[in-house]
Amino acid sequence: MYLKEHDMRVDEVFKQAASQGTTPVSFEMFPPKGELTLDTAREVAGNLCKLSPSFVSVTCSAGGSGNGSATAPIAHMITGEFDTPSVAHLTCVGRTHADIAAKIDEYRSAGVENVLALRGDLPAGASENDKPASDYAYARDLIPELVDAGFCVGAAAYPEGHIACENLNLSVEYLKQKQDAGASFFVTQLFFDNECFYRFRELADKAGITVPITAGIMPFMGKSQISRMVFMCGASLPSPVIKILAKYENDPESLQAAGVDYAARQLCDLKDHGADGLHLYTMNRPAIAATIMERLG
Image (cartoon, rainbow, N blue to C red; front, top):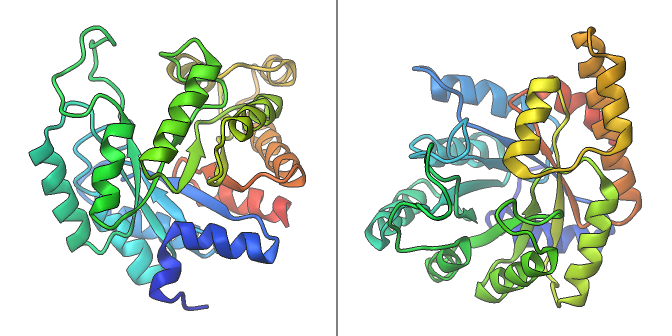
């Protein structure tokens, strides 16, 4: 079905889903590396969009933060060529007001309507006490500028708290500040224990968070990947995941299948518990997304 222009705004996607009693399912992809970035991205995006996601978000780079030169063109491609709402990530770490003004112009020129406002990862070797100079300390400082520019703005949520913030209640307080700054939806960082999300959702409700929070899930593919995610994101590993890793320690193919199955079961459970939305970190693997979409029905 062709989507009208106003339906390309993600806040409208959530409103329409709520009125119909459905659960939006969205994907994340990243700009592929190499000289054929856009051609490769077109193949990945096309195969993802065939699965009819509610929207597709595009990161700044394969590693998280970056200059994001391909983000806006890929987001434009997803919307313009595949009639699917897209969300372009935008990080503010180390950026000046002039940098962000230039990015706003770039995103507008590409027809971007939805932006996920993020602080972004610190440069390699930097610490919280040794951050690069920036006009924006946190994502919440970036949000009003994007809202004023006319974008539908989303932001990140952290079900187990941000890795740099030990107090979960404080993380929820920061989430409320993002909502007050103008964020109209949230996408969570990945997690492996749904109970963490349910506790977080309860705290968010009590704190007055009223905009949709869509739950982000990433299938685990192997031990090295899951170790990286645990240390980068601070995600905890529940006993079932540890048992799967031990069971298939010497069988990578079975471990990958078990990881996809675990993610599918997570998403089905989240849907059954009334999550506002489901967001799959696809790792640019449409086949995995297809398997999980089939499980979700």
